[in-house]
Length: 343
Image (tube, rainbow, N blue to C red; front, side, top):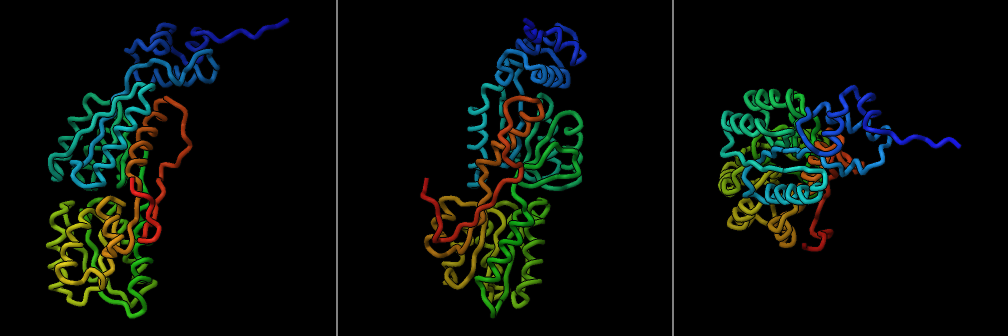
């Protein structure tokens, strides 16, 4: 009776083209093996169906550097919580998520933080805008370790993957909603961006303008202003907009600061005659929807984005079982009448 021989470490070593000692170090989690060899050993151990829990094999710890803005706005707070969940969820795969926050948003400052954080990292997840200095810094890092861009893509950096919503689709959706809410008579509309150098913000704005121009010609997008991701500035920007455009009918806020816009609208007695569309379902935007100050919120689930970004890194290193979820995260549209229960 023929009994099939179980594969051994010698078999894995021969198949993956490394020494027995290298295989032993990888499968017993003793470290000291280059990333490329480690991935090759694990790949062949799985192909040969070694009789061990390879998804939980005690390999060396992966250090993931996560770079975002300070968690002062609700989006970045939710993102941080998502990474905290990912750290706990993937602990058996020996992952360390190390969050670093940008001190400010100047290009040279971002590049310095990116370079510094990459020195002791095995991978990087970054939320950054498109500027030659920033793109160059991330491109250098991407040549050494896998980089995942989050929320706003940087496609020319050699990054491993982009995780986030389709920002063009988000902009088109906002345009469709704005045009329908304002109605046949049309009117003037402004866009409040965070930083137009964020590719995601640029894509949202361009798609929004395209839909308004093509489908709702009576609506005139008269200006785009920047909050520079400063929540406190949106109240001033809104007041200034009404001074310049007294007949303003709509505001598309594609970044932070819904509360500041709402304060200005209430002070001007325009909260129920101005269509306000924004992003991210938070306690603030939920309350504004209930009060009828906001008309629609496009949500991209930053919590989910954080977890998917870490999964993309794990997939690169052949750790864990892929969830099968798409890297392009779904977008939800919330109105006053379809709000989910408050958490």
